[in-house]
Image 1 (cartoon, rainbow, N blue to C red):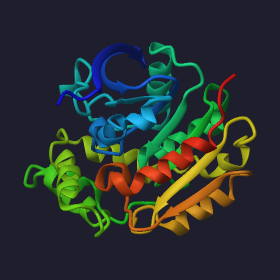
Image 2 (cartoon, helix red, strand yellow; image 1 turned 90 degrees about the vertical axis):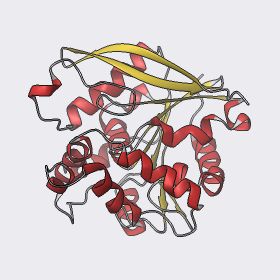
Image 3 (cartoon, rainbow, N blue to C red; image 1 turned 60 degrees about the horizontal axis):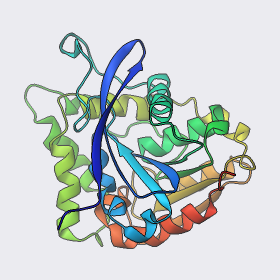
Image 4 (tube, rainbow, N blue to C red; image 1 turned 180 degrees about the vertical axis):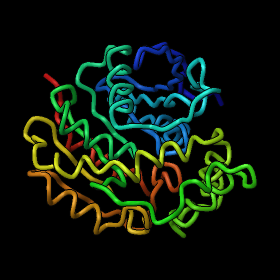
Length: 280
């Protein structure tokens, strides 16, 4: 069976450098831009992109960040260290919105994608019609040594998969558990470490949460009850700091719900979409 997902490339210029970005989309109607987690790629969203009931009224778009999946690193990458920053992350997302001519899309991001969704809610809320922040919280410092993910004596991808395996719910189907882990095993050298540098060291969101205007663009946080990296307590603390934000704790789900257990995640995502504003 041929799936309805369409994959294409677009070139954007971010930070004065050209990046050829791979994205997949399916459906029509309201645009929903989907962000993957650290060290992974847009394949995490494949189940929702294949969901005909959701895509009947929503145009789901998922893209690979530079250095991830099918988006190659920019020219000259071999001489530099990859370290994702809040500013470069925001610029990339806004450049994609402009390149794809998306009119006030919903932004749905997971893990580091959820964190940056809240940053965008605080800094560029007028450009979006709502934010679905999945496994997102204000900040947690690393409880592990991120340098382990880029060493000559260790396989970074397998180290990354070993770390995140504890964040997948025991209720996740075995096939989807291993499909999720495979994406981390395939991560490019140093990419997971570079993403975690952003995720575990930038605490600038904390002071911005109170400025988020949920009357302009709703914010709904989803968190899995089995998430060890962003616990339900972390997510509740974050939601409490955002005036008007809502939150749902997803029983039997972990840190990668759309990938690890898509069937169980689906009703929570549909509910979140229903909470988002419709552009006039």
